[in-house]
Length: 208
Image (tube, rainbow, N blue to C red; front, side, top):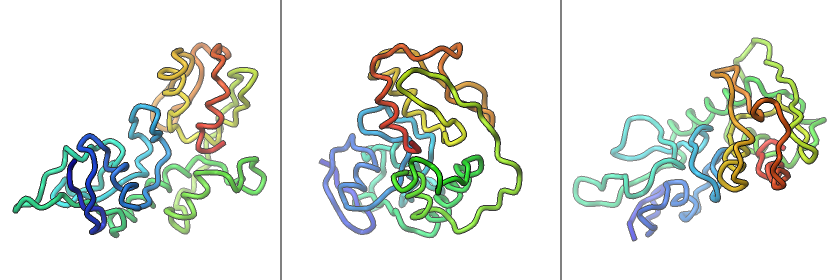
């Protein structure tokens, strides 16, 4: 077991555990969208940022860094991780602002309203106002199968559905196309999903 301090609380964790798992073990709440314990690490939502003492001078994605990768202090002290510093707070607010740039403001009429991870985390970790004044992009809904209804303007590209179909269902049904602001989750060649496990991606989706 390895020793690590999370917000001043020293705990013992497995060296291969991620910083996110160590934070959870210490009782520290760390937001996340792309991370799922049964799927591979993607590290693309960047909401799980934490500050590492003695590490790089910028927040680190806690889902993508293992405890064994941290350096101990100069006198052999346990490495330290902070989840509530001003730098972490500003970084999370910035990430949330980017995630909401193209997300529709339709929470009152959304069928996921009140049960939405994005809504909950925006309230808990986001800022109180956005600075984006341009029009939000529009994305056509996809017909990806008989069990899954899509509202693609709500997608935040966490890739949980893509990783589930590849790693659990064992099919190459879904993927990302385009780049930057134009990136979309879709099925290859715009065909319906063939996997009988396709309904599971509804439960995995953080926005509904």
